[in-house]
Length: 92
Ligand SMILES: [Zn+2]
Image (tube, rainbow, N blue to C red):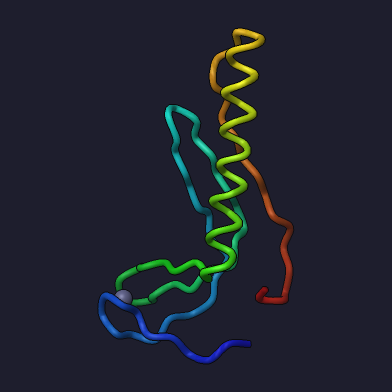
C-alpha cells in the first residue's frame, strides 16, 4: 500500500475507497463503477492515481470514438456507458 496522502483542499489524510467516476463527452455519459481512488473523509475530494487517471481517460476516449462512429454509420443515438469493475481487496 502507498504512503498516506494529504488532501490538497483541506490537508486531511485521504483514505482509499472504491468509487464511481463519471465522464461526459459531447453527450455521451460514461460511468465507471468500482474504481479505487483516494477520498478525503472531511471534504469528499477525490484523487485518482496519475497513471490510472490517464488510462481511464484513454478508455473514455475510445468508448466515445466508437459510440460516435456507430452513431454516424448506423444512425443510432448516443448510448450511455456503464462499466463495473469487479470487487477486489487489492488497492491497485
Ligand atoms: Zn479534504
